[in-house]
Length: 483
Image (cartoon, rainbow, N blue to C red):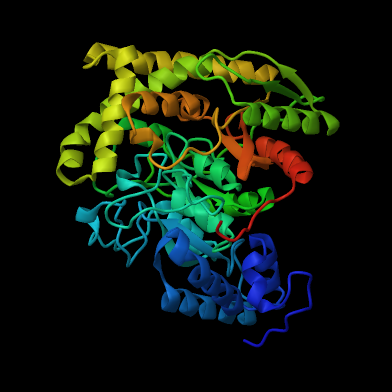
């Protein structure tokens, strides 16, 4: 394909890695640029910054360029094009991508070659995405810090001393540094929203059932928490690109038992739109930087016509503690495998989490505790749904602190307790199954700040609208060069 690239403020085709996913898709569809040019630009950027950051642990040069050439042939042929046609995307190493190893950051899984795509990967491929690489994750995708014995440590492009988050830390680092405009992640305890937060990009955790997904071997019996709380979602530099990527991820697949085909859209809300500001729900007091981010976001939403009222939402603190009963007790079933093949960081993190959870649930919770926990979960879901009838959007911290230094979670049990408490609002939401988005608000002392927006089930558009208001005032602080 021969494409004519217009003169732009962003420069020539060598700078296409700076473009948004939407702009790339539009440029390819209108033949202003070619998919090969877009992919090559991102591959060049990967070559320039990935050796320093280690965000992508596998880069698919030939495969990506072949797919780009096929995308260009389809453009010239006038075929119907998907929403991500020709857009470079990274896939997390804990998801099956045909022809690639699903390592999950574990040395023993390095040859675990996938023969078919996971549902969410298949949907992205059908949407026209070009897979340029595989993003790093901690072993077993378990920590908020991305490091493992197989692939090594991923760095945050804002600061080499601080975590890029986890478990989608490679995804967050890759997007923030301009390797790809969109990356795939998954989230059962903040694994999309936390990397987005500390890397200064946007990350969406959709409603459970919105996106068909699969984590783990297709013939395995996944734990109930993985079935009912884990979601697949996008990280991108802008809210518009998150919307676009969500369209690409959507699609029915019978392999996900909790997927809702043709997922409903939340009913409209009454005007004016009401937002509940939840600053501190009694687990961890936000730092000054986090409080300032909440204040700025609240003011920007008020300027846009939202009614923002500071209130309390105690259901979050209870849901946070309950997560550690239900998820961690189910995770206990694979602890023998962790002890056999997990790395030391993973083992220390698990020990710290169990020690922290023991304060609420004891050293060995009973089956009755577990059953009562799931019963209580339903009551908490109902309570939050009723709260969201009054306040369709909730503004709250992603974390009570800015990015932690590397390995803060495994420095000691007390250090792990600090991390757990800081992440409480982020951890509570997966247990309840509602959508939430992390959106940047600025930079303080060299590190990104941001806020989280929680919404009604299947009201991704509502929270993304609010996120767009914040983004319009805060601006976009990425892509950046590693610092």
